[in-house]
Length: 299
Image 1 (cartoon, rainbow, N blue to C red):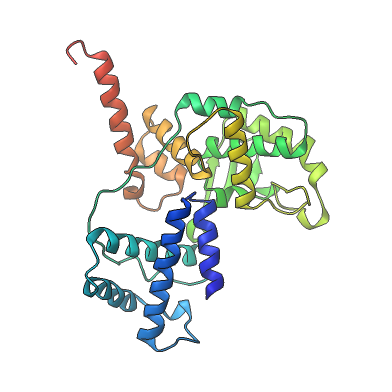
Image 2 (image 1 turned 180 degrees about the vertical axis):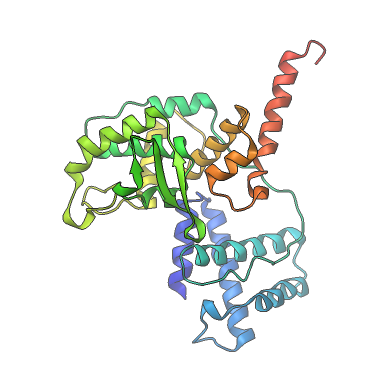
């Protein structure tokens, strides 16, 4: 079970880009959850994540309340549990997510951070050197901002998932749900250049299907792309903290600020519920208020 916890922590570090302190909190929270379940179920040596049900997690919530944690601490620990079981479900380790109905104290929700359009332009305009790795990194950055895919979806792409003539990619999101994500002509051109001119130099027999390859010919990992993105951001002079998820947030925010309907953005992001997408309306509301302050003669 420690293996699943370490995989979860790696996912949170690479795809979600959480800080070192936040990662330590996740580790403590999930270990506390594991200790409670093992003691409560009496299965210290044989506890299986598939055996955990919603009633077990309800008991854990009551346990946290009995310990008299603050609302903020309980909300964080419950959020950690939900993130962990959501990861297990997404990875196919469990068949159902028992944490969906876990209730937490309501506290203020932090808004996602997005790059400005100028920062994105600087990132995308950063020239690539002729090396295959640099051409690959540029194609991945273009593609994730053009489509809004998750980094796990990005690195999972195969050659057969790309249709450059029609201008879309096929990806598989949470719960293995398939969707088609459109990409614009500029991103398609950069991707085509990578496939034709760079990928053959990285190719090996063990990577005949993977779209994005590392220098050893295997499929590039989430962490590999995250490191490449950080390097590209530094070269572009971007001082803000940036992760692959930042580009996904920026994609959604810029579309909404440009007038795209929320339902369309929901489909593009692969959100199963509109409520998940609605967090971005707070960001667009801030943009509208700023434009009002600049434009209204009495503001």
